[in-house]
Image 1 (cartoon, rainbow, N blue to C red):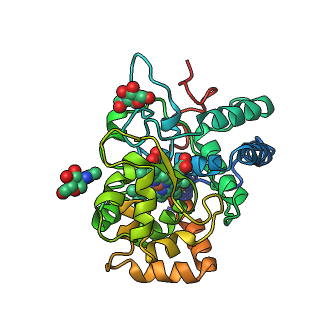
Image 2 (image 1 turned 30 degrees about the horizontal axis):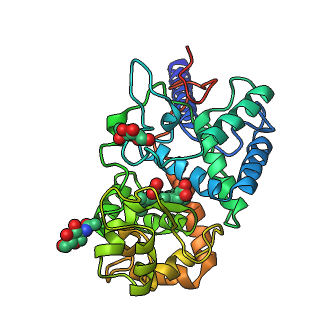
Length: 324
Ligand code: HEM
Ligand SMILES: *[C@@H]1O[C@H](CO)[C@@H](O)[C@H](O)[C@H]1NC(C)=O
Ligand SMILES: *[C@@H]1O[C@H](CO)[C@@H](O)[C@H](O)[C@H]1NC(C)=O
């Protein structure tokens, strides 16, 4: 009797331990590499800082790279894979082709990190750290990046084209639904959209807005039409800043822009269009502290989308290729 109850409580303890271990291996943590690659944070930071000091826009591009990685099958580095004979990857998908930048910076970080701790740090984690360091480099908030993601062994063009990434033509409800599908709230969506305080967009994504939308400041529309002709195909790649005031500073001007109907994208203006997100836009426009802290919290949530952990995936040696 006594020995069987002792052994069944032993079994219960073992079961709890196994469950704890199982769940802890599926969790990301800020100190994941503290023993195995203690220098990784410093290495990523120094490469990002030098890339951003050469070209400020690169900070924007690296932030967006993390978003586009995470929304397509989770933050698994899949966006970094070049096409192979067995799959066509995400790089030429509609939201990414001729648009996503920063692959070379990630390669440069990866080769430095591989020298220090070969085969330890995933490309997906490098992208997440680089996004944070980019925001900090441009004057935005910092946060602890949770780590321990592993890299996918495949990538899918059709998944990247499936509509999980919202286009610039999205309505407010499209935006809300697409973020909700990734476990992100409307508040997260509004805070993360503040990313459009940095970086550039191509005429092809804002043509209809500056020529045809009615909820746009007339003189702003005229200025942007100047480098974005109505004729389809003409000037498609001409760039304009997403934030007309301070395009290389991570601040809360994005919200001030949309309040004055100077959002560059149709989707930007949707956040201040008489709907449920107007009040949040107003509060972020007045309170950069709250914006910064909500943005940082939302970045942590976005970085938590379906990571590969434990023995899933792999630690790629080269971010562009699956290990052979
Ligand atoms: C809310 C839905 C969103 C839509 C519809 C959207 C759409 C776009 C579009 C169309 C561009 C211009 C791309 C081009 O012309 O090549 C762009 C740029 C950018 N997006 Fe978003 N985006 C959204 C959310 C986000 C989020 C969540 C982030 C980051 C967390 C982000 C970060 C950026 C940055 C930084 C740029 C500028 C990139 C550069 O200059 O290289 N966006 N976005
Ligand atoms: C991607 O862009 C290139 C031009 O740089 C173009 O030739 C190619 O057709 C585009 N691919 C897709 C899938 O749209
Ligand atoms: C804008 O609207 C006009 C008239 O409805 C239409 O002919 C034109 O194709 C539209 N332009 C764009 C860029 O959608």
